[in-house]
Every structure is written in structure tokens, then in C-alpha cells.
Image (cartoon, rainbow, N blue to C red):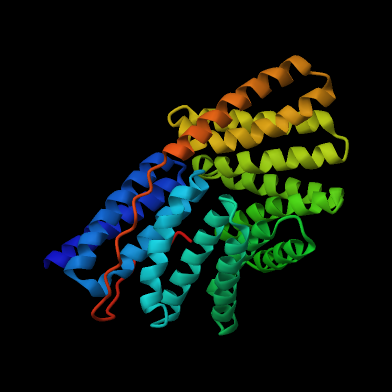
Length: 342
């Protein structure tokens, strides 16, 4: 076997194994394998530049993982590198165009998490427009990715009516699909829309959304708890906020407490990777406890939050972000493929 073929096989295998581990909830192990796969794909790009698409797609997948893992600042240079490469060949086929749209979606999500809202909206608008164009060309396989981009765009817009429209469009697309992937994204989008619904005082709608999202996550988690429970832990605090809005405080307390329990269980082996999610859930609980006259518990939660936020601030300051290497330009356009996460 030719050297480049061996590198391709090794790189594809590492990346796909990493994606499989991520879907099982083994996040730290997955990121480790993705980084190893990227190192091999860099060697492949040097040996055979026409296969640089492997490097771009692996970088995009890693960036998406880092965002979900609460490390968006680290994801940004990874995704920018991916996009620089992907723009080189994005017009060669609809699959490569979709690679660019996926990397843009991930970058937009990372920028939004880091507070760069205008830049995030611009990038996510391009991603959604690219996916929409592909879908309108008679390629329905891009409707779920379009819904995913619209969800991220709605999140980036913030608490405005236009964001509600983005979420509604995504939900309509996803309700037409019948797959586990679409069901998972539907649950994510329903939960995401709750913030703007609560802001617009559509409390019952927000509660219905969050209850449906939690129900979907529980159903999907029956067969894959490790892959789904982290998302359930994100949806439960959202449901708690909606329950508070309609005066069901005890149920809200139950939901917030369950979320914290899930996060604590997963964070035992890697506290840094779960700190952001724990902070979000504790903030919901901390706001709720005083209304239940549980002031001593509220004080304990506040103390833990101060410590976690300080640890998180220290980690962000210490974060090392090496400049991405200049992407190698391919000499030709014979591309091979591996699985996409986004």
C-alpha cells in the first residue's frame, strides 16, 4: 500500500473512532482521538495535497466537539483553519459545499459563545443560506443540517422576534423528518427556543417546548445514555425556568436538581470539561432556592458558583491557542471521504 493510502486509512480510522466515542458520551477520549487523527491528516496533506479535505473535515469536527465541551475559544482557530482549507474546494461538489457550510455553522456557534454576536450572525447566515441553496436544489439530505444552522442562528440573534422565526423554521423542517438525528436536533431546537419565548412572555409555549424536548431526550437516552444525557442536562434547567414562569416551583427544583446530578456524575473524571454546564445549572437552582425559602442551600450554591466561575476565568486566561498552520493548497481534486459529525 502506498504511503499516502496508509496515512489516509489511519487518519480516517482515528477520526471515525473519535466520532463514535463522542456519540457514546466519552468526550475526553473522543477529543484525544480526533487530535491524533488530525496529526495524521496533516501528514497526509503534505504527502498528497489533493486529500487535504480530510484535514479540513477533521478540524471542523474537532471544533464542533470543543464547542459542545464548553471550550469555544479553543475551537475558533481550529475552525478558521478548516474554513480556509474548505473554501479552496467547496465548489467542486455539493458534498464539499456542505463541508464549508458545516464548518461555518460551527465557527458561528463558537463566536456566539465567546460573545462576538455580530460576527456569529454573519457567519451563521452564510451557513444557513448555503444549506438552503443545497436543499432547494432537490437535495433533502441537507434539510437537517439547515435546521441545525437555523437553530444556531436563532441562538446568536438573542432575545428578539427574528430569532423565534429562525427556530420556528428549523422546527418545521425537523418535524418532517423521521430519524434519530432529526429527533435529537428537534429536541435541541425546542429547548433553544425557550429563552426567546420566555422573554416574549409566551410561558406556556416555552413550557410545552421544554417538556417535549426533555421527553425526546429521555426516549433517545434509553438506548444511548452516554451520548444523550449531557444534552438532557442542558434541557432540564431550561424546563426549570419555564416551570418557574408558570408557578410550578417544586417541579422546577426537581428538574434543576436532576440536571446538576447528571453533570456531577459525568464531570467526576474531567471537571474542567463540564464546568460551564455545571455553572449554568447551578445558576438556575441558585435563583430558585430563595423563592422556596431554602436560603441556607442557596448560600451553598452561591459559594460553589463563585469558586467555579473563578476557576473558569483562570482557565480561559491560561488557554494556549497556537496559531494555525497555513493550509496547504491541493494540486488536484481527487478527494476521498470519511464520516461527518455536523
